[in-house]
Image (cartoon, rainbow, N blue to C red; front, side, top):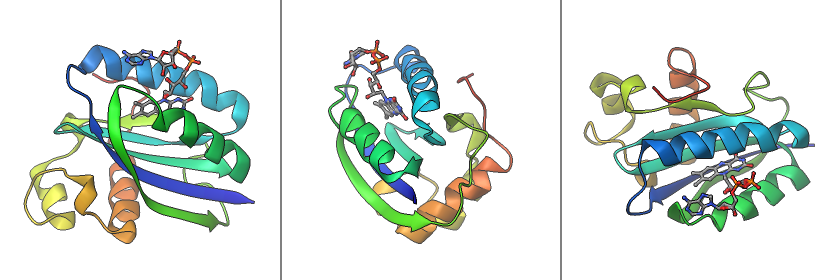
Length: 141
Ligand code: FAD
């Protein structure tokens, strides 16, 4: 059984691009052995992460991630069984500010600011899917 979990969180104070690199490296290292794949977005002080994989593996990773001091207020936007992975080739793909232009954000938000706490589950899924078509990398710029 495959699960998709999407959550939003706020960057903790003092977090910078070096921390995001560390997070991404640990994610890719740890997710591979657990069969977890997905995407991490980071922009305007917010994270949005899509995790997919077996239910036990996704739940276990989310518990570990939720206790990480580099972000806070992790809030689940979407948790559901899915028939297939969307990101089977990505132990953790990444898109940051550079990948999100104002026109794209305006389509999913009330203005052009990336604030994932305002997204419905459907909008979060659609936004990540659209970004993934053009902007995913394995390491932040
Ligand atoms: P290390 O990376 O070596 O870290 C050791 C410990 O120190 C961990 O407990 C870590 O939480 C903590 N730590 C390290 N640096 C800092 C710091 N600067 N501030 C506070 N605590 C710190 N992990 C995954 O496995 N998969 C994911 O998909 C994933 N996504 C993440 C998304 C976000 C937004 C964040 C903030 C973290 C994410 N992580 C993810 C990291 C996860 O929370 C753990 O830090 C990581 O899995 C631990 O890896 P490690 O055992 O190799 O330890």
